[in-house]
Image 1 (cartoon, rainbow, N blue to C red):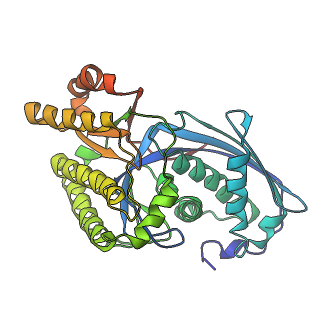
Image 2 (cartoon, rainbow, N blue to C red; image 1 turned 180 degrees about the vertical axis):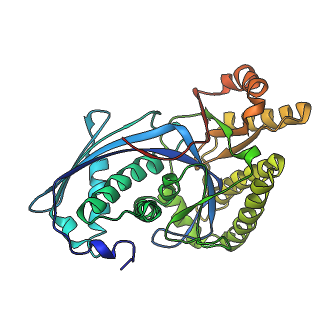
Image 3 (cartoon, rainbow, N blue to C red; image 1 turned 90 degrees about the vertical axis):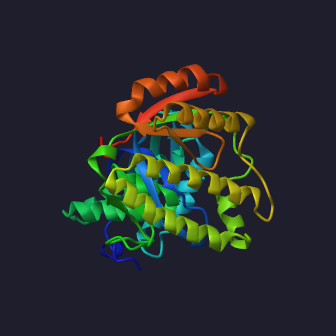
Length: 349
């Protein structure tokens, strides 16, 4: 049993309502592949976003059996409700009383589904934060740092990347040489003031549903010929990226960003059952970015999640010149453009 949940193993269920807003995050160093259930094969590093958020209100009540009802943007969503129910059932060994809860969830996003921003990270961390507050209501705990560590732990069990969304700024997850690092929860990371506020402009190349889910992609790493080499590369990039962030070296960070993005998609192309999530316009945008950087020497870099959509990372100080390039040269390649930046983390609402 986790020490983080042990105090709540035997409690008396009470009615309670909680509301939280939690942000999405974009990984600079990718987590792709698992050692076991929700345990990463390598440490990862991400930047928390500001504008792309999920707000979730949850009502907890005593019941004869576990039931979950969920509304997304005012409409009932059975698929998501089933996912939350399965998640809560997975906690029964540590929280056996959870099987006697009625859970009603109302949730909404500030960004469209399929926009190239992981809504599972913001959505499931927002729900985990409401659950964490409920636990604290059932048995008080005034230590704030422990609250967020517990929320990160619960978020990870729902979605790996969600554990990084409970902290603002930059966040690491996975066992490493960093103090207090863990595979079980994420921790916040201090960076150089020059890089504490970065822009993230998302180029939505395609909003179509992915042909291969991230869960399936993680699974395919189990038999991947290059898996161990990839994990070694990620660990090296993790250390190098943290060093560059703490030194304030944007160009060093940017090169790691791009190498990580391309390595992620190389794993898909070379997996036992090869596939690609990239689109022709993804490659066109990448080449345009490389040409722009070579011509202007401006620090514009890209990264990709497990999909075709690009996140463009650059300093706030270069916003005007770079957004002009994006509007003129890259916008025709996209369905939509979302402008975001480094965020301060979740908030109770």
